[in-house]
Image (cartoon, rainbow, N blue to C red; front, side, top):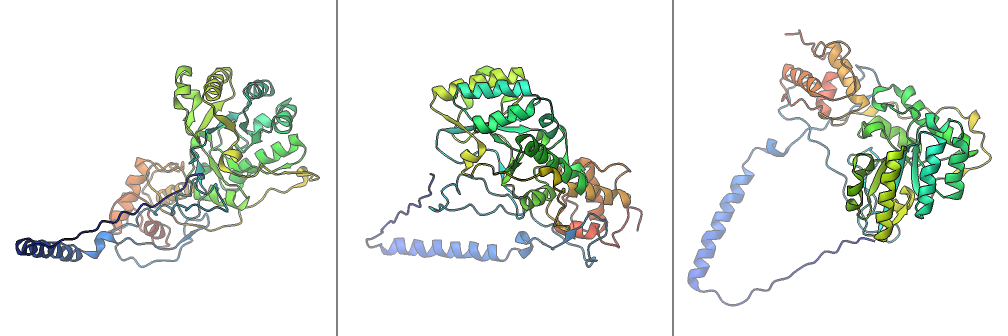
Amino acid sequence: MPRRTIHRRRRAQGGCLSFAIAALTVVALALVMAIVVTNRLKSPADNVGVQVAGKRDGSFVDAKNPPMTPSPTPSPEPTPSPEPTFNPADPFALVRPQPTQEGFLPIFTKANTDQPQIAITLDECSGAGITRKFADLALEYNAKLTLFPTGESVMKKGMDEALQYCVNSLEFEIENRCFSTTAKLYTLNDTLMISEIWKQSLSVSYVLGAKYHPHFLRLYGRDGENDLRTHTFLKQEGYMGIAGWTYNGSRMEEGRIGNNLAPGNIYYFKSNNDDLERMRVLMEEAKHQGYEMVTLNELFGYEPNLIETGVNVLTEDMPELQEKNIPYYFMKPGDCTWATNLLQRRLTDLGYLPPDSADGVYGSSTAAALSAFQAKLGMAATGAADVLTQERLFADDAPSVDEK
């Protein structure tokens, strides 16, 4: 396992200095002191940001009215979580990624390891026949796959036998890919978002004949990986994180796939015949270079997904989001989140965006509208949704675009 070692070098200085050298040293020290004093005289605002706690429950005016004092600087982006140190009791702590912000789960795109291991994932699993072809290929190369079938695919004819074979005979891992193929969770209300995740898990449990507990969720196109609401629900349901990938094998030429082998890589493939051949090339090269092809759980040191027998999954009720008030958090252009959707609706209500603008994608029009709102309040017009800006935007007395 990887370890961190701190090397300290000590230097000893000795000898006598001449009077001339001592004089020069005094002058140099005086210059250094002058620079230090100058730096201390800089404005404290150079390093100060504002963080204000807030809550969002899905409505537009749920925050207490803050004072309308202009703020010269927006809240800074949250700093990444501190990296873990080596812990003999949990040797995989350094292998796993860390959350980027407080309240988020990790996003698994690569393992931090020097062990010759990779994980190969199969997305969608569009039918029983093609899924069996990939399973037979993996068996040929002594590889284990991590499957991400959609719930729609799971319920197709013959998929019950195919998935039972993959799990029970080949020790494959099945993870969550939402029920619908093109589901964009950041555009859906709470009930529909939860339904997409829960129905896929329910479908897998149904065809396996036992309650199956997944560890990872994969999002369509990886859009919405930084949506705090999705992370909050996944934490509630016991997920370890969101599954991404290191390389998209579907977009790579067969001749290039073997050139990208490295310890800890995660490879993405879709269930079609072209990707079947691409995966064969990867497995052939991985076998030649001595790589072990393992599941995501094995790569990151988690126990196999729990299979709970004696449970009638058809009598289960769909869970609810227990945390009703999702905290405000820093958002910026490029984000795809439910919080952006609410932000856009509020900007539309106040006239900064045209009707029907809410799509959950933080694009240039959203940034321009937010900049206009910030300028209206005398704030720095950054176009980024820091915590203070969101508090002001969702306050009862937030000014409309027409107010003077």
